[in-house]
Image (cartoon, rainbow, N blue to C red):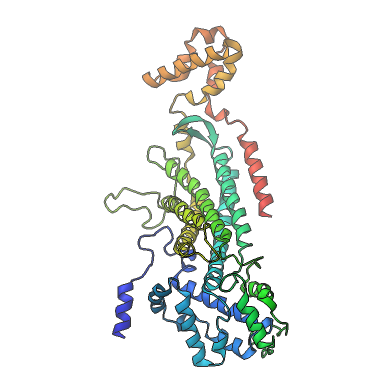
Length: 490
């Protein structure tokens, strides 16, 4: 016992102490070492099921393999240490699992991992893990999208300053801003659904030829036994010979709930690279939303704030602080995932029929990208559903420049009266004077002889410079975004 405890203490626990972006989220629970180990066991079971389906594994062996495929029957820490010997965890895992099965049924142990290779097991396990996490991400994106659609509709007339290059540009509405966030989230959701539905099982044998499976078929004569009711969950053996091993692909993929691959993809790493790309899209889309919330929650802006919760946003030194913690977690994830996605994309360069190092480099970056994206999606739900809007601050900020935010509109009106160049020069000079002296722009323009000659009265000028009356097609654009959302959601 002391030796075991000493080993565990020396290894430590990855509970997310330095990773609050995913710590404690549902996605994090799906990518633990225990989850990966169980996924590898699930793949071994699926392989035995598929081989039973084509007559290569007896029902009694299948039943024994299923009964022992539980992660808590294996020493996870010992397997992790042993993985260094073969540069991957599957070699030691197969040996350990075979021992566990043999302890129950020595004859069944001969059918564990029969004809397979390490990459088949770990790649298929990775697809299982990815599908589980993408399912969680999709559900969270759906909730976030619903909240943003509601925000867009509710605040279609809530006017605030649009900002370009960090400066006031022209007025917009919070509804249109939320519609932009909504489109990003829906784009990400569409890609997540597509990728999740196409994740392939991996089965190829030593070098992608399925040769060993065919050899076992020839050795066994393609004979199988029917299982006892309830033992395997299958209707019975097909009795067909698995000539060449190709017949295993469909039942193996079906047993895992994954897509059937056209070919083994040991060195066709599109599924992994695509996972990196879609996880980067998820965090990027949510990161844009979170970054806008961060900006608009600045003390001097104060147009939005996050939902309050005990201890959230607290500072260890400044009692008055309420930091935008939810947005910070999302932005943190969005800044990390692209680096992991880059590693996954680089692993497309896989030499020969099995690469040395490229495949091995994928595992940890994939796990990190999955749990960061899962954490970001989980956090975005709470942020979107609880976002607090401060319309009075938006209105106050609109008037900070004394009407200068609407000079674009006035330039359009004055162009046919004064000429485009002259109108722009007049308004630029007046805006600069307003910014320097603090005098309202309307007051300066009223004194302009050019505008008086053009027949613009103070009342007319005041109306033209009212920022709440210059939001263009914002409402129509919101309607377009909401119709697209409803269509994509149905």
